[in-house]
Image (cartoon, rainbow, N blue to C red; front, side, top):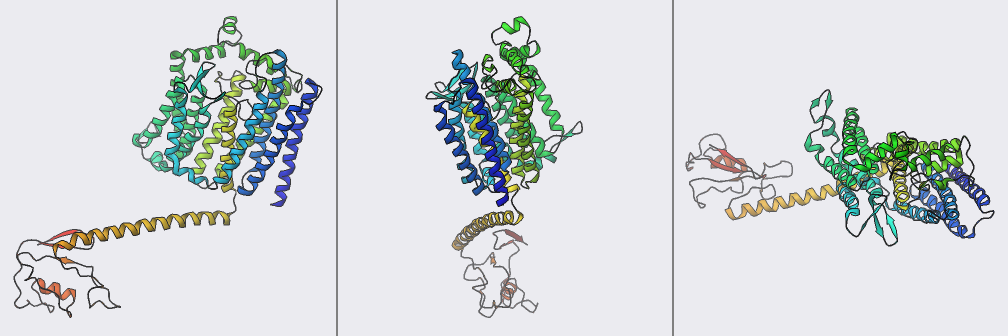
Length: 562
């Protein structure tokens, strides 16, 4: 373990060295000196990263540290490029000029939140108990931009809420809560979803009552996102839904069903919504003059393509390109900016880092034995991977632009914080997946023992309540109850029959036979029915009427004897 920590510390030092070298090179090229206003924030940021790593090693010591280092490296590369774009915007007199400083502050905030999460959430299985609560929170977050006075429309999409002078995109956090709900619900109903439905064209479909709640949640999310004109996030939610459904059931038919639903939805959206049609037109005809000059046309896309292509194999170098020409170069098109200054080599290296995170997440999902954790990791990892594909595919003309941003690298506090929490949830689950068997068994046994004790207390309280109710119901009727404790003939070595209460129709309470001290319950019962213990008719025994006799046993059930 000590050797691993030493190697990890050297990896962290290497990441800091790469970042410092990139910042130094960039500042010397654009300024000739290092601005003093960045010294303190960068120092605090590096100190917070080290502190969070120590917390992670202490409270999640078996987690996959490689994921943490990759996420930090991507975030620092993004901050370096954002600071560089700020300088160009300041020179040109347009665009954001403090996005880099804001990104540093947001990274510090995100890391502090994640450190607290790794301390408080020691067992990720607790999230399963709040599945439906997560559903409600996720839906409220999705609806929040629609509240008058709270939501803001930026770039034609109403997906923001204003908090003072800052804006937050609640859909970034909603995807985490919806993923927890999907994982909890699909885990609880995995058997019904897998084998409980009918077969249609060799595909087994689930029953509607099993799939109904999750379809309702998905429909609500889709409706809100379409109304907010944010089709990128709606596509992300739909893909996460299909992926987790496939992992839960193991039926590849769900992928085909998802593709059919996606095709129908895309065709309908392209006809019903003008902004969707504009993006498809810009994707199909980006270099057409009428499309390029139109409002909301392909100008941004074409500038991003030319910027990406100008980087060549090794790029122009940090500080030597012109990424500020492309609109939203520090957020939606930061991939194009990085491609211009780092070239194809740098872009492939960045995509390889994403691939390492995805591979580590898949390994965690395969190693974890808990079904809820497997579904949760699969959904979160696929969400991040699909988001990277959508962004890179949109900039390279593989698919239409959707408005999503590159995780960990694009400017934006909401995206950075939400994706950092996503990564730390994967780390927390990986801690359980990579934990040695002895420690894992100890934690499992402790949880099972606690649940067993709680269930035993509930069962005992229920039995006491039932016993009190039976005694209360039997007392006013004047019935004699034979119990093992009250019967003098019940010895230590013999077990008496269950307590019985007998009624003798046609007889008053004074005429009913009573058991003497020496009689056993069997003898008393025989006498009461007119038969002696030896099998002969008992003398002077009143005749029992032909009507039914009620027998009430300890469980309170009534039987009819003729």
